[in-house]
Length: 299
Image (cartoon, rainbow, N blue to C red; front, side):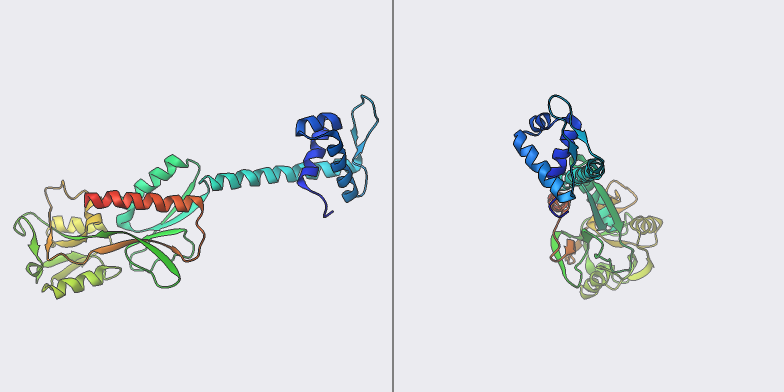
């Protein structure tokens, strides 16, 4: 049975459909002798005749053995056709992609990436997972991960942008324009939990002469901004978080540059080292890089 080839099964199916070796040859673009040779090889492989050949104008008749081979052969040909179609679609950019993300990216840049992928590949299967605040994200089951930092281990990364920090306060809390870092010393501050880039940012504040009073911590951008509006305190937030929450047109909040500027939060696109990208994942990287470049122009 090891000598059975898909082309032999396809030839057999064509003969069964057409009723003669000659018409099958015409359909397949073979000579009639080639068709006869292929059936002979297949009959040798399965150990018996597949067709009765009455001769003359009468159609060939499939044998009982031939009926068994044809039934399973058609099933195999259908499966191979489905596999070929799936591979073609995969190479064209369809298929599934699993992407990890975080809050600011989900609100600001990821919708652009998803929309462009959907426009280019309507049948692609996009699965998104947002990180749990306070936990190190797992990249094992992901094709790509957007993250505000680097990960230990066998991981490759591409830096998308520097996300600068700004001060968000109630109008009148500080004079208009840039605010000196030391002006935050002792001031009430609403902040993220001390995870991801937050500890590094708070250390930079301390080194700049500011030790604000943290009066409330929350992982939610909207929650932090609501507390600022309520008068709990001000907040030092990445620009993406501010932009994604439509703060700029809100007359209950004012946004200030910090002087000197704090080291920005770095936003990366990461993936497992040595992993081959699917065409869909490769296109996602290209779109993310383009979207990040457009975002930098707005910053």
